[in-house]
Image 1 (cartoon, rainbow, N blue to C red):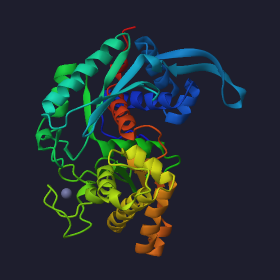
Image 2: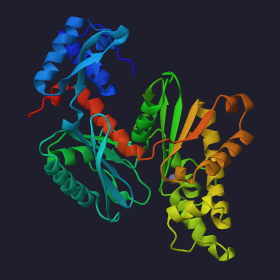
Image 3: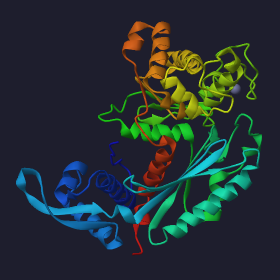
Image 4: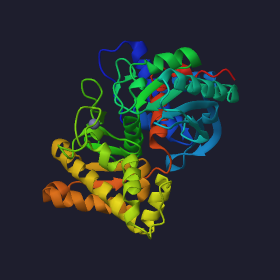
Length: 405
Ligand SMILES: [Zn+2]
């Protein structure tokens, strides 16, 4: 996203913004000359020389030798010593948490998943997270760890850094998660709701995007949530609950949900819903490859192989998702909808069922101006998203890049 220098700032603020802008440019290039940084940033050569000298002194940037620039001009290449700067990303879901280590350019160094007992108090679960983060800190003791990003199932109040409500998990509410972690791990901790984190990753990955674009990023996993971007900004709402589409009613007299509503989208579209449907219908499909122990991965595999029970169940979930997306499209009129998380692994057949449903139920002109696709990320987008969050926040305080080695 383009940065601009606002008027009325004092010179320290401006220096900080200029540093951030240069870090952003360095982060996006393998090696780059001072002249090309000047061209990309619009900053004066003298400003760049001054800032780069600081970065080199800090051990953050190094000169990489002569590179061939525009018009065959030879100049000295600059590169971030990205391997020295790590980010710890964590994601908490109902049954496990994941911990990964990325460098400042997004290369992943490790990833581990830990089972949790979700009936446990959140503080006990966070104690496990703390233990593993401390172990990672030790493993990377020679590197600079910029901070910890943690994606949690929403919705989240940004003001109090705590989960507002989470179906079936009242014991996870009202804990200031970042404060608790920060005290324990002694690193800056940034918290984001998982769908918003994934949205940040998806938004950053769109090439040539129009900054005015309205985007909806739907995460269909054990629960369902969405991030909404409009004019380059995440829409959060008053409490931070915007995008909590899992609690949108698709059947007004459907089963009662803990949120107070009935027939919530979660009941029909999530992986938990798909697994429940498979188990309750299994008796009617003697030829199915599935059984009552089948995991969501087994079900999606059977779906790709056209297993009758898997087809019936997953297509039903896709249609319900389509019904919900029609409602949302009529409210926010997105130009692009991206479907991610576990259910998106069902692939093109699943996507086509969703698209078919939407097409049938929405005005032609709206449909024609709507792109619907699956996430292109192979990895967990919420994890990647929180790593971007840490980097974005660190860039606002460039001194954090001062390395001790
Ligand atoms: Zn609900």
